[in-house]
Length: 213
Image (cartoon, rainbow, N blue to C red; front, side):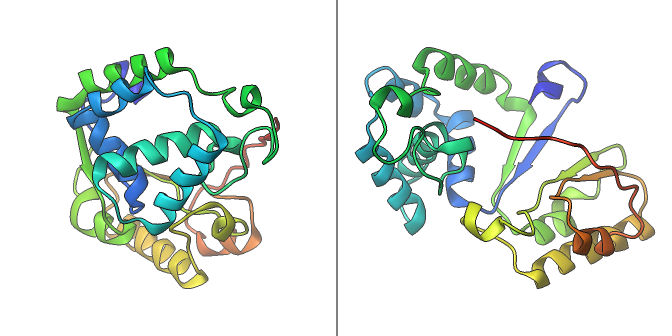
């Protein structure tokens, strides 16, 4: 989004298998008032977060409900991980819970993304299917792939990867790179030996990053 906003790229194609993530983006670029209106009137609580996480776990709800639930869970959970504990802990204060809940700033960001909607294309597909049918066939593209992490993926994501999924993605990306080397490919992962083994053709770089409260 920052690259699009800066004019460095002309088109942004987003894909995510998770219905909550997809619903959020779809609502922002099609009917942002579904979110901005509620942002002005809602002061979320621990119960609201719990209800939102339950909606996301079921993954079956109208798009606007999924979008609002994902926004709530992202802003009220530790590190933005929708399956994580509330900011400040389960018995923490309302102030700690809403430390990242800034309705005015969130609404402004949503409206700004909406203003770029004509340059944004959305998909809700399996990553490999998306790459094979949509994502790879632009010779000047940069493909950024951010798979679920190897070690903590099951705990962090609604749609996590088993080993076979990691292998399938690695094989597809390397086959595409060998056969059609036009697009640039960037893949981000946790630093694990098994992942390193899966990408023998890649230039591998460790970016030291420590997450903390």
